[in-house]
Length: 301
Image (tube, rainbow, N blue to C red; front, side):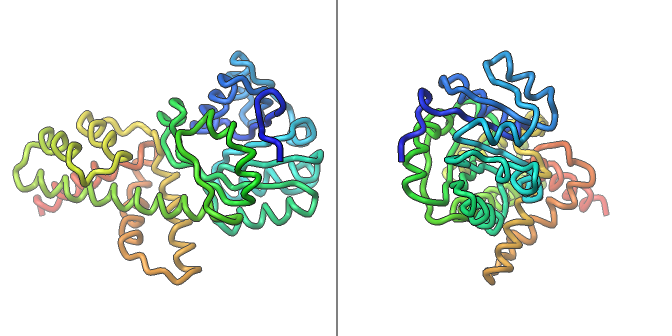
């Protein structure tokens, strides 16, 4: 399969949210021709000045590009975009390749690949690991499932948006690996929140505790920035709490399907879900604030 070089590829991009808009901009900056679609037309117009071509409908987009990328919120959003008479699959011109970057269940990834193949469309699930700053910098990690030759052909696109990219296996393997990664991300954040609250309750200076903790070997790179932001009381969303909540649901759903036992993930999901009631507009690292508040309340009772 021929590589998807900027000189030979017409890209379509669906879903211009916090992550998608940044990825689309990276592709434009790399010299790709990119047509864009989002239900929020203002998002398309914002990228128009960067060189993107806004498209009015999914059917028009599907029939006018040879590589289609989507970055959507959940499983239902993926089905809404790809299925039905007005969806992508019903209006695709062969040969169309889909790079589906949403965090969804592996079953949905496999389902999409199967349905697409019936019409001659090929799909690679390309799950994203990384935050919005990584998307802006082009340093995302990409986790792909699908045919090896398709993965190799997509390398020029990956190089424009990511620092590392991996082929994990058949369809659904990319989204499976994303859930493995995000299980560690979520559980790790909860562990940090509890440990930091413990140190504070035992009399350590919060500022010094967070500064020192960030320099220890036990803190993953994905969590280091969260500590400095927490020190400033900044929980503005880089990875919004509701998205982590959705990922916990997918993780525990997969665990149930394959009979994996995940008590730490279940406990972390409970705290995350309780935080949703009051902090749904903030970053998933707000569990640090939640645990501090719980510790303070426990001391007063």
